[in-house]
Image (cartoon, rainbow, N blue to C red; front, side, top):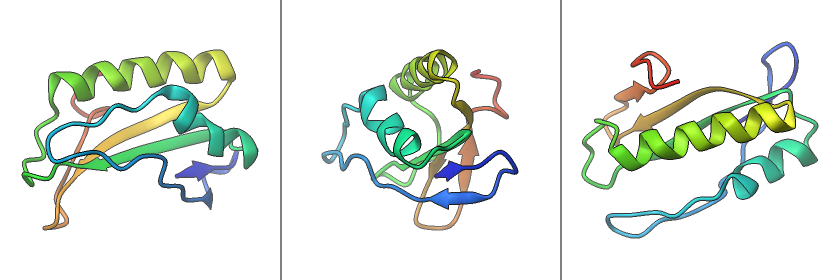
Length: 98
């Protein structure tokens, strides 16, 4: 989700669809929509096919890369959520991963 300076959502963009058990996402794909929509910040979310909302080591690493890239671009990553089909989620920010 791309947000403006008042944290209103200005765009929702699906940047990548992964496979059954993995996904390779690059910061340029995540921030492309944010740049084109003049977003001040983003909230990133993805679903684990297993419905387990526990962040993986890869989720944590990607989050850190996104936060670093966002700092360079001036687009803050407000949160990264892992969601499931039961409307449950885990916030990587609340868990202290960035």
